[in-house]
Structures are given as C-alpha cells and as structure tokens.
Length: 616
Ligand code: SPV
Ligand code: MN
Image (cartoon, rainbow, N blue to C red; front, top):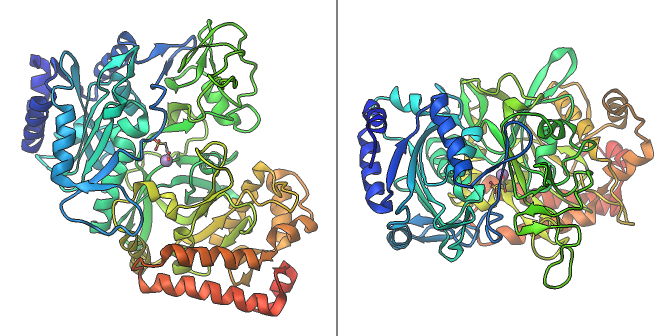
C-alpha cells in the first residue's frame, strides 16, 4: 500500500519509534494507500492538488487563494469531546475534560478502526518552533485530509529534515487524524467526533472533524502536549502572541501577550508600525538567565470577521493580494471572490456559495432570521511571510528576548486601560485572574464574565497550581525579569460608551515599551504602576497624531475601587478549594487588602491625582 518512493523516504529516517507507531496506526486506520510527504516543493504541491481534486478546497479567482468549508456543526473547537486521557485521576483545579486512559484509547481506537478504508493516508513531518533550535519539538502528522495537511504547511515549519538529522530520537509528538466519512467534502459523522489526548505516549487521536482547532494536530492538540512537557522540564508553553514594539532609535522590544478570544489579541500583535513574530502560541525558556521565546507556528489562522481596510489594513491588504491563502467558511461569489462579515464590502446579490449551501441576501433560517453571509468563526490561513509586518526574527533559532508580558480581557467596568504589575509575582496573579465578558461572538448570554486564567483554560493539561508555580519559579532563574502589564481595551462609562478608540492600544504598548527601558515615571497604586498623564499625552501626539485630553485620562485611569474589590473577591471564590501556591495566595489576599485600605482612605473612585499624592 506504500509505493517505493514513500518507503525510501521512511527508510532514510531510521527511526524505530516512527516505524513502530506507523505500523500500528496503519493497522488501525486501514488506508488504501500511504503517501509519505517530505519537505520538497513537489511533495507539498501534491498535497495542494489533492485537496482541490477531492473537493476539500476549491480555487478562488485570485492566484494562490482557495477556500474550504467545514460542516455546519464543525465550525469551532469541540470542547465536550476533547479529553485528556489519564492513568490516574488528577485534580486540575479547574474543569478540564479528562477520561481514564485505557477506556479513552479503546473508545477512540474503536471509532478509528478502518476509518481510512478506501482513502489515502498522508504522512507528514513538522517542526514546532524554529528549525535547529533548542526550542523545537518534532511532530508526526498522520491524516487523510489533504486540507489539514495543506493548512499545516502554511502554519508550521516542515520537519522531514529535522527527523532525518535527529538520529533515531523518540521525543516527537504524534497526531493521528481522520476527517471520517465525507459528503460534499465535509465530515458528516459528527456524533462520533472525538479528540483524545494521550499525555503518556504524547499521541493525539482526532476523528470525524475538519475544523482546524480540532483537526490540525500541530495547533491546539500539540499545545496541550507541550504544556504538559514544559512544566516537567521547567519552561513555558503559552497561548500568547509575540511581537516587537518599535521604540525610539530603531529599538525593538519584544512582548508576548495572552488574551481570551475576541479581546484584541491578533489586533495587538498586528498594530501598525510594529512587527509580528506570532499570534497564537509561544514556547519560552530561560537561556543564560534571559527569558527567550519563539513562535511555535509560522502562519496565522485568524478570525476574518471585521477584517476590513480601516480596522485591519495590513491583513486586509494581504487577503486581497496573490499569495497562498486558505479561506474557510466565507461566502464565495460566482466570480470566485470571497466575502465575509464586517469586511465593509457589499456582498453580491446573486446566488453565492455558503458553508450551509447556497446563499443570497434574502436567505433566512427556519425561524425567519437572516442567515449571516459568513460564520462568526470563519477564518483565513496564511503564512506570516505573506504579511508585510512580519518581524525579521521570525525564524531565529535562538528566539527573541522577552522583555514584557501583556495580559488582557474584556472588562467594561473595572480595570484601567493599562497598568504595570508591582512585580513578577503580582503579574503572575494578574494573569491567573483574567476574566472576559462574553460577546455576541461567543455562544450563550452576552456580558457574562468568564474566568480564563492566562487565556489558557481550554488547553490546561497540568493542574492550575502547577502552572502558576512554574510561572513563579521562572523568575528565580532569570537575571532580568520581564515586566508584566495588564490591558483593558473595553472600559466603558456609565452610559455604556467605550472610553477608548480602537487604536489607543498603540499608546498603551508604547508606554509599556518605555517602562521596560525605565523611560517613564509611574504612579504606584494598590493595583500596580499607572502611567502619568504627561507621558501618555506625548505618546498620543507622537504615535496617534492626536491630543489626549486630561479629562479622558482622569476618567480612564481613576481607580474604581468597589468594582476592583468585587473582582478580586470573585477571584478569591474562584480559587477557593484549589491548593494554589503560597505566593499566589499572598498576592491575591494583599491585593484585596490594599484596595480596601485605599477605599477607606479615599472612597470608591480615586483619581490619578489623589493616587499620586497618596504615596502608596
Ligand atoms: C483559538 O480559539 O484560540 C484559536 C483558534 O486560536 S483554534 O484553532 O480554534 O484554537
Ligand atoms: Mn488561540
């Protein structure tokens, strides 16, 4: 079932674990054919063509552009059927989906037995993180989906050569995926969708799905394996962007940032004038006393909604230029042009292709409501090097020196737009206390606060106390400790209006960049270091070409102590019953005490002027 060429490619790798895993999986999946793909342009082209020939992707009018549709019920990560398999029960602290390992393996292998009958199995090799790097982790992907194999080619570095030169090393991750039965190019056996993560053997099984967050082993499935490995080996795997903020005199300062979805993560990483290393997942390690980080990926699987010429000019331009791009779950006109929600481009009035079938502006669902022209989670897949703002260190094997970490959330009534943590441990506590209000983009009620530690709740594969402890311990190994910041782009006034413009985040990150280099004084407050008005006023003129009114500053940076106290009491309740590390408990407790004392002295809302004179 494997041709001579594929056989030769495997033989060259001389890896006994690889041979064993592959034999086992072929026996399980029972494909008709097995094709081994190496790093060559020819092999990757084979995958691209296969995806088009099988109808998993279709060509668009612009050169290099294709689109893919996931099934109507396969448009996002399936949290209920994604489980970590464990030999023994582990208290994760939070609601992580787990299952007894053997029972889970039996179930998923049962579902995958013979799942590739009559199909071709693609064997692909990748490298998570830059090649030839101490950060890198090798990964083997087995899949019957050419779309998956193609997407991974844009998003991850090819790794056949890494395997070949690694001399029988067995420390690679394994991902076994099948889209299952397809109709019209889409997975149909959604009831049998399973994503089971075996931490012990570092193998993930994913069946009956195509949506990238479920199907691409290298994305969130590898991330869960990496978190578990990282915490054993004393490094960090984080759900963070990585970017360079460009300061004065060509100075570049690297920041990473964790934000729950729909809170401005990608738009921060893509801020005009700055350069991007990655927008989703990083590995960070101590190297010679410095915290260094790499982007695990080399592409972006980004939400396309609201990408338009005004709000996201860089991405919008890239999506309208010839390059290899896969659009998913968008509208496609007769002329082969893609359309999506919030693009500010008028959709065609004629019948167009839609992930639910055909679509016109008059299309209605069973209840008579208009059907949106694209899914809210419709996306684009593009290589970072197709973007003009890519940073030149994107493939640097040494990674970049991490100078700052930014946390954020969607918070309408409590946190100031930006604050620097009092120290590392205070920052670790801020990350653990990220909350975000639900929006129309998330299912369920709007405006409900969801606690999402480090924006990583969905991917926690170690107990939360272990995770927090690793962060606390990291500082002990560093000669220079990154500064930690907390942003909030969504503060509102009492009338419910946003207090900031979308691009104000540019001012906040430049302030953070200056703080790293000790260029700005700050006001010490119970919640951290706040910017001075004069510094922000200058940054607004320099970077945004606009005046920043002192009255706006006062409104945005006054401490709303009642709301803050309520927030940290919520957190105290959230962490109750979890055996958190002592320094964390201390940080949370003293945060509340400081706020209560401030409130007693100065009342509910404390202006920056009062904070400045209070000498906290
Ligand atoms: C996220 O939801 O955090 C993503 C997209 O980056 S997914 O691939 O679904 O994880
Ligand atoms: Mn993500």
